[in-house]
Image 1 (cartoon, each protein chain N blue to C red):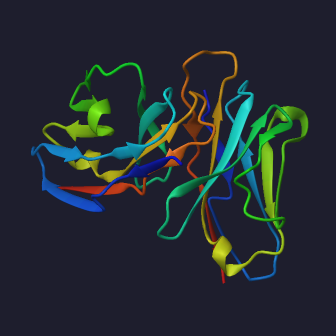
Image 2: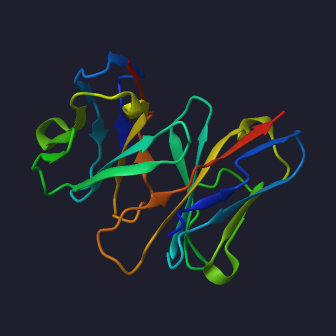
Length: 115
Length: 115
């Protein structure tokens, strides 16, 4: 069975600090996709990144970076120099396909960035 | 371009009543998904439409839930009769069938409270 664990329920940091959100997944599939979504106070889920199981290269996008480690089944997300606008709930998700069918979501991590 | 739109944003109904949630996907998106997050739990997959056809409804909790997508455009999710445990946030997502490696776009969700 597939499962996604986000062990951190809530994290609080002060603005400009770096913060890492952990994600550990379980799957028996050899081909799968990992995602991160952000849920701001407005409620919608905002796509951040997709990574397929064959691509272990880490990725950086501005202040965001992702570390994919197949050996430990982890897909961690780091925000550098956090800002108040980063405050949101962040979900890690696992899917067998790119289209979002049968997403398995983690429970989410609520990040609060304090001024 | 308009994103995925869900109506209503909030709904409070009494146990035993009927509620219909609506989702308008991004124009041209053939894939439409329903997910829900009940209190304190993970976001769970409910079902997947490809155009007007139900591709996968393995996540539907019971026969009190009925999803339709007549004409392959917007979709409705009816809960009849509603029970207390149906309270939660219902998300809709859509994606394109014709574009490879695309992500699913989520709406802002409908918060359903059954009292």
